[in-house]
Image (tube, rainbow, N blue to C red):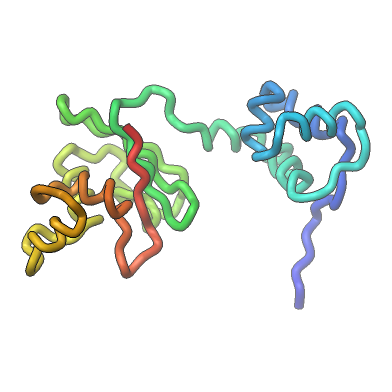
Length: 181
């Protein structure tokens, strides 16, 4: 049996504008959040014609859960090093690291601990961060490690540098890490 959903298949441009205003977003912010062009959003709001497509479902979800955008905001207060831990293309955890002060801050964007970079641990130590990095690259005891380092053009074993080259991808899962400096 095929599922049915209580979602509209179209809305008016005024509903798009009302949802955006309810969320307190500028047109530019909302266009970025909805992954549409600013011109498209402006046209929807100006013409007040029927709007169709994925934006209709997004508007319904946002009207039902107006706090969703704030839960998806990337932390503003960040350190110089940011790692974005993903499963496929979904952001699971943002990890901000201050290496000189050995501080780590995280923000999870998923509810399943199996998808979080540090599981249920919401305040990992710097040592736990280092263990996490090592878990996302080949071990330092790997046979013929020097050959692998040469292949990656890395002079010595450093988990963060290895992750920058390999995105922390492992053969057995779909997780990867984007490093932002």
